[in-house]
Length: 121
Image (cartoon, rainbow, N blue to C red):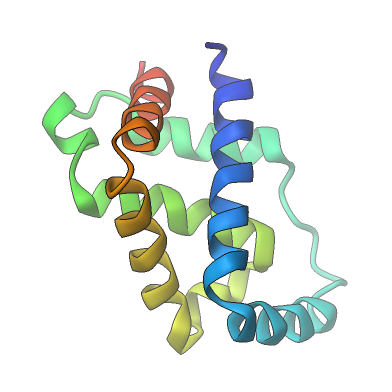
């Protein structure tokens, strides 16, 4: 699996899971995103590079930690919603619910962890 396509697929999964679980957060984020349209959002390739830098060289057990998974999920969701989303009260709960949802699906959890391993090397 190519890391770029893997991250893109993971991003689509996270986006669907987040949309399914938090309509109110998305509405609030949408209005905040409209306010911040003047700000330049990094490209998906730049986001991938930031994630690679953060994950590079981490030991395998740290890659599989809940904190590292939440960081990756938060990075992807804040990129989708807007940079300031991480400061919104419901954002941390959304990230945690998405992470728990992924961990609750063995196949999806394995896929998520494979993508993180690819990005770390």
